[in-house]
Length: 234
Ligand code: CA
Image 1 (spheres, rainbow, N blue to C red):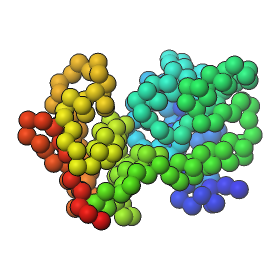
Image 2: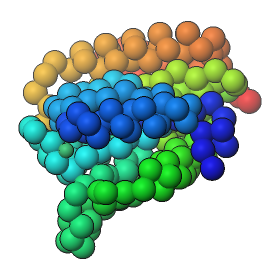
Image 3: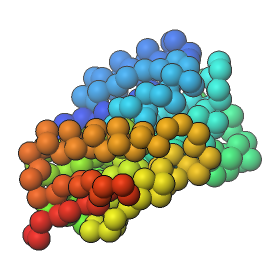
Image 4: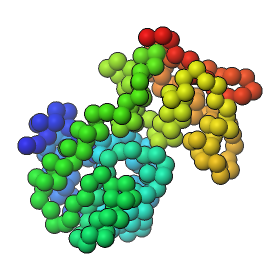
């Protein structure tokens, strides 16, 4: 029961400040064929999980700066759907509930059995691979769990913002979406930056579509208003 059953291995982010624990898990998980990045601080983890599309995150509750639950809450507020397994030394029911309410998909109390950790994280990663893909438009699907655009056998990982913007477009194909609507859907109604951030991110998505060789969809500019997703009939 290990990485062999999972095929290519899981790409995971381990957030743990205790060096000895991090080393142990890094070694064990790597030996199972998984690809592991390690963050020791909450602030660093916040950024990294948004920038890189992980299959699953192992998140320790107790960190030196932001605690794990705060990190998790912020991820979920930003729309990050990556499955999260929380690790903690605390066993109380109240804290388990807090963790799950904050958006954890699973929970394990230290000290835990390594094989159990492995089985649970592989299950989470598999579940993530299983679904939540939107209908394919012009041959390009948006996969929520992998946070990626998928075109045939190719996929392009998206950051959380890119994903949120793509979601708006993919869920309203053909509709003209104004910049202000996209801005409030993706950056929030209290966003105080420049509206042209929308144009910048549309540029990122277009580059990824081009990289995928996706010719069936186009994010078309609607002069003076915003954007519209044009999809070729399947
Ligand atoms: Ca810790």
